[in-house]
Amino acid sequence: MTIATLRLVAVACTAAAATATANPACTALDDDAARLRCYDAAAGRKPAAKPAVPAPAASPAPLIANATPSASDLGSRWELDAGAKAPPFTFRPHRQNYLLPLTHTDSVNKAPYQATLDALAGAGLVQPGSAPVEPTEAAFQLSFKSKLLEGLVADRADLWVGYTQRSFWQVYNGDVSAPFRDTNYEPEAILALRTDVDVLGLKWRTLNLGLVHQSNGRSEPLSRSWNRVYAEFGFERGPFTLAIRPWYRFKEDAKDDDNPDITKYMGHGDLVATVKAGRHQFGLLARQNFSSGYGAAQLDWSFPLYGALRGYAQVFTGYGYNLLDYNHRQTVGGIGVLLTDRF
Image 1 (tube, helix red, strand yellow):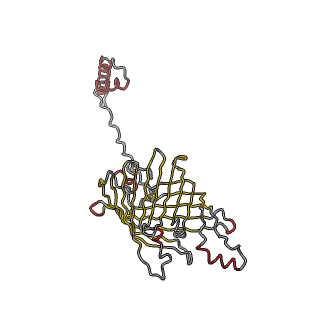
Image 2 (cartoon, rainbow, N blue to C red; image 1 turned 60 degrees about the vertical axis):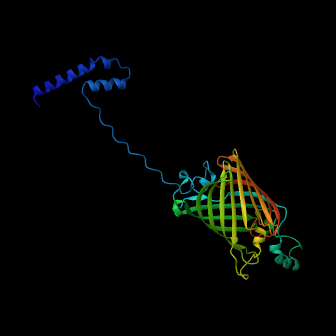
Image 3 (cartoon, rainbow, N blue to C red; image 1 turned 135 degrees about the vertical axis):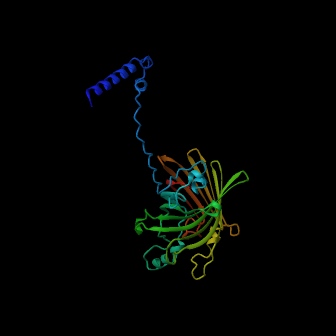
């Protein structure tokens, strides 16, 4: 570049700077950034383009869906609402998940062990009339489900599989090494259909068609099991939900049936109602066989304890507290913690 060219560039820059500096509109601006932009514009300088900021990557869907209820408990529980949808194979709570470190029954069921007790008493190993179980024990329930297929039946139905396990632990019975007295296993498959129909002031949200097996995995004479198909009708209104579930038990060969009279005591269906009152929730489970007169009821109360942990109290009375006791009447009370509720 020649000396003459350099002089021309210097003169041009000086003139531009003088023009910008002398611009009264720019001088009158108090904001530093605005004044700088004014001088740049007067000097004919364009601001440099800002680099593009990449959009944040989408967070992966959680493996276990958030169990916090939406405005609609049934909508959250069965993903009936658009905002409640989660990808298939996401784990969700199914029924309650709880731990009751302390439960107590007013009537220990000796019948399942009577033959063994009689033999031991005859050998002088136990006192006649004694029972191998204590009336105080611990109990817990684990229950989850996962959606396998969605958008079935005109985009109004999803296919789910669920699993529930209830265990009864003689943790305070050191005389017999604190065994698990009974454990009930309950796998099931559910086709959940969205209905959304107004019925007698309630919103009928869902019709669930289920196939369920329940057993305690024991050998004779303690083996108990049955297979059912059911239709569950789910209703709600505000903080109130109601599930009515009639079922049909599949017949078994007499030689393979461990409990042929189970429907006499467990009936042909159940009803579950829940209501929220602030941060407290109350529940009722009821069964009744009107032909035999046998039935049962369970009252639940859950309340805030610490963070997401909730206190839980349960009272059961009637028949069918568990499979081993299906034909034994008793009243059982328990206290503990609730990890997830029925949503």
